[in-house]
Image 1: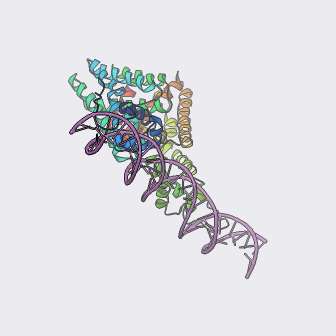
Image 2: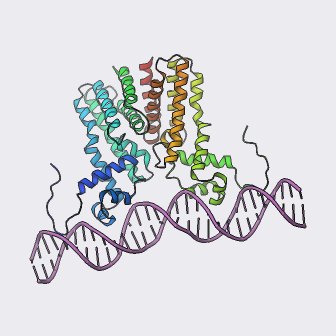
Image 3: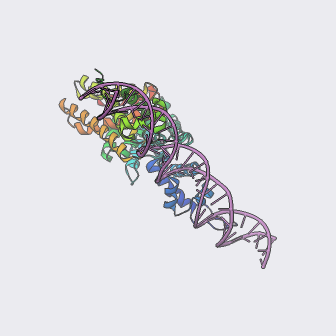
Length: 191
Length: 191
DNA sequence: TTTTTTTTGCAGTGGTCATTACATTATTCT
DNA sequence: AGAATAATGTAATGACCACTGCAAAAAAAA
């Protein structure tokens, strides 16, 4: 069920907004907020600045849409892992394993949200991804509590520290095997 | 033994170059390469652009000096930890514990090198910190091998993944306790 | 057909970026 | 003292940044 495309008045758009968000997301996910230029986005989407600003307001507006879209697509793996877990240990297992897999696959490595928080000096852009990361951490803590974890908040915080390590390492150096080794090690401690 | 200040010909410098490097390092460590402006550095050092360029060549030259200085001061904790370790387990223990401590103390959180690799789109600046990080990983692997670790390369890679997680988390969210929890967990698996 | 609404293309806005030309000043060497 | 050297301050350079004013164009509503 994609967005309903109801014909409205006025000249029709030359480009698909949803597609544009996905393309912009790819750029932002790869290099963060600051270093991706609006002109570059225009070229990628095949659109003039005027059209881009008419559609998204400003750069932060487009970034917001891109982050939302990431959370609703690639980022869904976390809530899927949480749903699939039926014990606290399985939360660790499924979240970390799927993190290692997702972060090291595709051409853009790492997590747009976790990496994005480091890559910008724009206060609002930072606040946006920080809130997203915190929401994820809160969701993990909630699920852990549900499943009877004795200290769900600390566990969730630890999981996020590990996820950040996986995400950043995926983006810079590490192989899939490097990430899996760390996950194996952590899980052997939790078992 | 600081740099010998031999009087040379010409008008004397208005500022101390070594002090300038330290000040610039603080700025770069806090926000990365791209988002720190030369004008801001000039203000901080109390120097005009002309003097800055005469002393360091260009922005990358100053950044290089700053990274070198970081490696020779704060960054020394890694080689100190390696020297203090007498078993592979102690390498994990001392490196990770001191990482958690160093990254979460002071007003600038996290590691300049590990965070810096994520924060720039400048290819040369990235290569600089990437090489530094790789050197650290190689040093850890070498020490592990020395101490009889069965798979020193993989162990070193895992340690760096964890260090990245600690560094980035320190910079964004996490408390000292959050970092220590992860270290405790990992060490309990290695023991 | 005319009006209303919305997006388009073109060209430019002021601002900030890293970097530098030029002339001057302060120091040492001869 | 005078020449050589290496720093200084002032002010500017072109390039790129996010963003916009304006008029033309394309659709629906009247």
